[in-house]
Image (cartoon, rainbow, N blue to C red; front, side, top):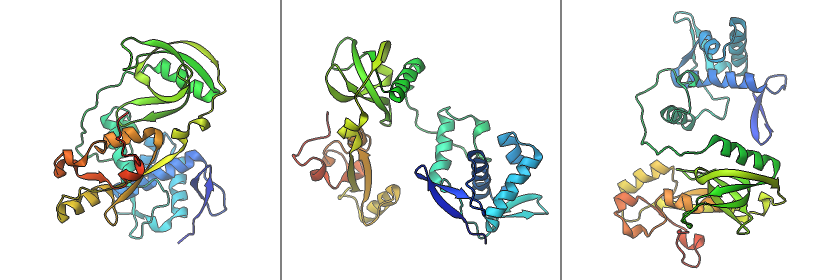
Length: 305
């Protein structure tokens, strides 16, 4: 079997061919598609590659030949079925081949983010998800926020805060975008209050000013520092129930560690139901507890803000 060499490029593993040449992004994406279809469907055709990427017969054939050269044990041509099928010694070449990517495509289809023609899954199972309210983020405002981040600018926004009955204008210097599981935020330095805060994008109503900013996201200590959450099954669950929860969360030895930015700690705990006293709910409903609460809140504080 051919030996693959992997080197780090821009912080991620990249596959190179036998000659040591790094694969171009477009080629790598098509080879990932071939591997995806082999793993999940057990087969892939030249026509699949042609239709997915708009390639000619020769280009699709070249991609299949390249994949065979990279991982000959992963694929062989079945003459009777007239298709390429998954080999018995299949070993993934690309790091992105996992359950998360498959399920994320299903979720993207449900949310309307991904069109069916762009989905790599051939035989879609019946699927659905719990609905989430549509968040009304203005694309023009989002564009301005992203542009301010890239150009190190401050923008003047009319913002509706829940602490104020009416919206008011304020200057903010955004440096990052974050998702709390329900809403999109911009992490920004508020020049009005002289501190770093979260601003919900859908509550930005208008824009009217832009200026240079000297505030760097590096100064946002809560954004730049991480907190380790140790999660375990609720202690009042039976052993069998606790084992089921351990499987759900990928726990080992009764716990799993989750790294989260301190700026997103409140949202993470709230989403996991860990922002309240675990004894306040039935163990079968609470299911998990925060094992290192004393380290997260050494003074005994709560998650509320």
